[in-house]
Picture 1: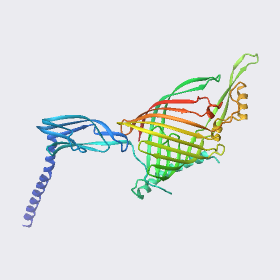
Picture 2: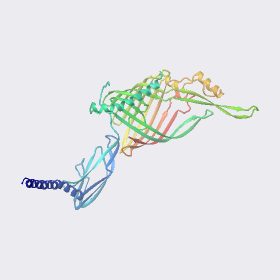
Picture 3: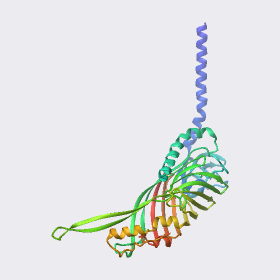
Picture 4: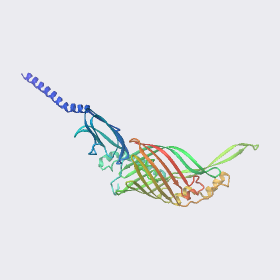
Length: 138
Length: 308
């Protein structure tokens, strides 16, 4: 009796575990499906300035693809207005010169929904290193 | 006392001290000032240098020489102490008139950093004179030549001084005063001022620098002066009296330097650069019989620098 109860308990535990795994995987599946539905690529992914804090200039190429035709827009995180919009399109390419002094995300949006995103990272050769200490004696 | 060795020992001591201090630095604070800051770069530089020089008959001729050099640049900073070995980059490691140096940054304002430092202000070397003697055998026939070499050595000049560097948005200013020489034989004092302006066009960094460097008569005379005994030695050695190597006592003088250049980042670690530098040497130097180069020395070059 005691043994049978234990078996039932094990069965419930297994069902619960499987359910949890299934539910846990749902967001991942959804994200994976979205990633498969929408792709956004950036080239190059890094902009190199000589000195830390300088504005960095780079010619970027943004490519996106979707599985269904619709109205899409590309946005830069630093700007409210879209970089470019496409009507009833399933793919697009935007080549432009971009400048920034900090990392910038680019988004593919349909209406207000973010469908894909990619980051342009800023890098530099020389670090800024001015000290803020006034007088010092060791 | 041999101050060169003292200077080298100080550098060695600081280099040994700094890595050991790394462990301590992590425990002090997160202000960043307590951490060891380092900068290392290696440059390959190639270019041409143009001036006029004295030929064997003591006539001035224009000369253009090409060069290819590897330059190591380094800076270590910890709690205000620093060691720096100037190089080719415009990374603010060095100003126009800095040399290898150890020092201590003791005062800062928003725009200025003031350092007490010991600097390798002038390199040492020696002037070399080759006297050629024709040899004859017992029958009076030529039997080869014998080359005698006379050297007049000049020591390096390690100096103690104060350096103020001003950092403004597009400008870098630097004033240096080195009133004390570690070499009693040299003495004197040096003063310099330089200003650099930077212009940005996209990721291209262009710069122009001008500077003046005054050296007192003690310094210039040590390197470029010719004593009576040295003059006699040379003429005796060369077995000629029609040489320009007459006794010479140098005054103080001002050297002017102008430089324009650019730097462009190829990657996070690689910088492409170019420069043109012109040095206008003071009369006190060019009038010296030991000075073979002309008044204006111009150098142009391209560089590729790897920043670690």
